[in-house]
Length: 175
Length: 175
Image (cartoon, rainbow over all chains, first blue to last red):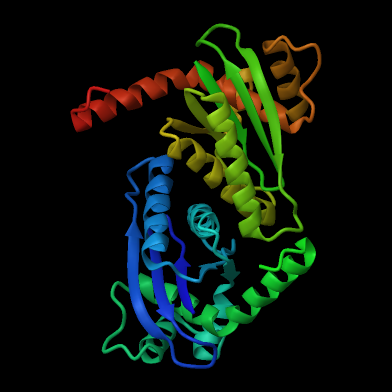
């Protein structure tokens, strides 16, 4: 199962692609950081993010997309941009016909470190170890996206299959 | 100048299309409310909104798109959905190659009622009068979208021409 994870951000958006099977080690496929210029206007920034994420989905052809769910307890100004970037990421997957799943930061941390309260350094260390990388992903923005993708490989497979079964039962479509 | 205004919302998204010239009365072209099912998952809702807004842009072929800028002083849960819906609306315009401009609620209220503190009833009353409608737009969600479009006709024309001139000067492209 190939998963493309997105850690949404308007200025820096992490993208991590891993391949794996639930309960087994994952393999790193690629990671990227999509940047947009904070000096540009919002429409240009969202369009650039949309184009780049759409390209990456087309390039890697993942089986599904995992996006971090945005919460509002943080800096209010940042959160609006993050929410908008996450909408673009969710759409890039949905428009390609892929199942898209969102995870809270604690779900992702718990999946890769065993604790929902883990800090950024711990997440990066575990991602490095789990993917058997010689050194931590650089830039660090990509580590969270890789953690999301790993989390989805381990937890999301079940969810996707359940959702597909529910959809099939509801619509009578055996796909 | 034909303007498509969007009052973003994940459950109900108002769309209003008006034609006009700065300083002169505007003419109502159409209004719509795009709804998504709160029981559906986020990817399905964003995709439905994206498809419908893209269709409306293709159908009406506006010269530009105006979207309400989202603020976070309101209900925090609602605001995240509104921010995501606004990203979808901005993208629908940008992807069609149209200039997209965002306005704060106070800018819109001031443009149509003369006061940035006007309430919803006042905005609806002024939209009804300015567009010379026999009765207020129904559903009411559309009134804010029409107010946005009127605001952009009156204020935005200048902004678009400035932006185009700046872009042309920067890139050397005379378009």
